[in-house]
Image (cartoon, rainbow, N blue to C red; front, side, top):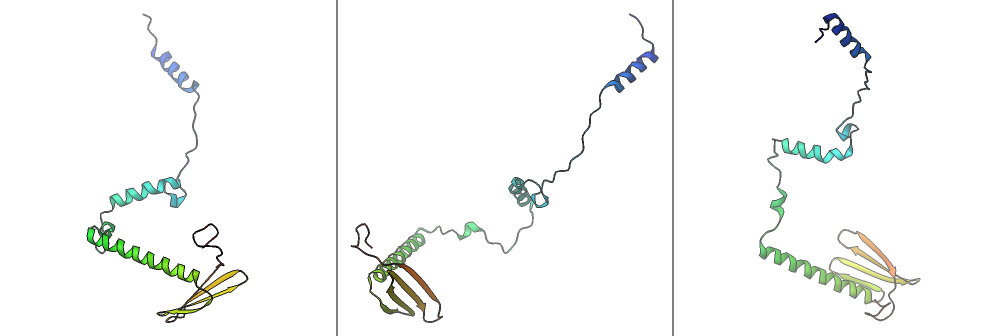
Length: 150
């Protein structure tokens, strides 16, 4: 085997090193946090990570799971109360819809119904505060329960 002198070996290594093409590119900073121009899809991940690492809890904070009613009796009472209120509101709506023009007072509420130009205007006034609401709708025509009826 032929022996290569160390000087020529060094020269070949240097020539091979400088003979290769060197490539480089600019360093580009890309922010991660969306508050500073980063990708907005990172926000949930960053918030989750921050909350997971948060060791300081608010002593006055209310756990949202404590607000859920789990007592079946109270759930039944609430469902019955909601159903009753819905039924009363429906009956009141039908009564107002079927009533003719005029002024009606129920407790601390005044209801004024007037018909003009094919429209029924219902003005509801809270007599205690003076707050008013105004509802304008077409006058119902036809027979209740049939198409085109009220």
